[in-house]
Length: 228
Image 1 (cartoon, rainbow, N blue to C red):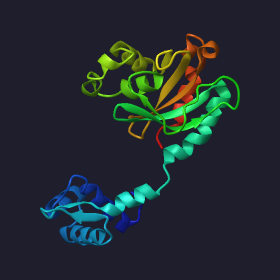
Image 2 (cartoon, rainbow, N blue to C red):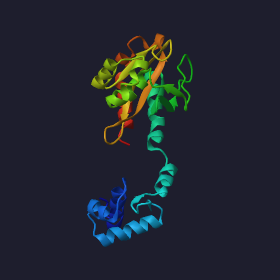
Image 3 (cartoon, rainbow, N blue to C red):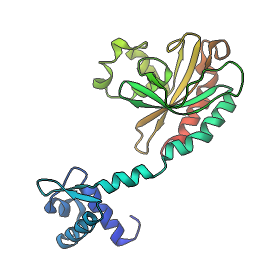
Image 4 (cartoon, rainbow, N blue to C red):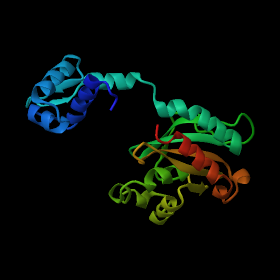
């Protein structure tokens, strides 16, 4: 609670409408008096923060999405310096991936300035079926969403179980010949995995067991981005 009474009450009303709410449900979920709940809901509706559906139930309004889209993404803002530090500490290119359906999208990257490197441009879509970043993004998913993908994956369910156990993933020539990588999870405030942070480069530099050299640094980078 913020201590600002009217603001706390308005937030309680917004939270009560996530799945839709009648006036009676607003009162029950928010714990506010009926007149107060009704007055605040009408005020929020006037600002398009709430709307009413065909059944007359209040639901979150379009203004919430407009405000969210206008705000800078905290994860991407924080990722740039963390990826740069990870690149400098490991000497390898660093990336941040989000899952989008059956792909993982590179949403931020810090590349080596010279020498042999694995370049993944921001916006690139890679399959969710290969590579250490894919392993991390699938390892904590519920079995019912992972099992249909496994026949197409370059890794097994046992691999994903090992990723969950140790908290990081590695791959050698799994996504692309000659490329190795190490990845770790980025979590939200509830502990859910929302992204994978990775380093990648040539096998001749990272070796056949890249996690032994770099897992700790990649995990720490993921922890710095978690909980934003």
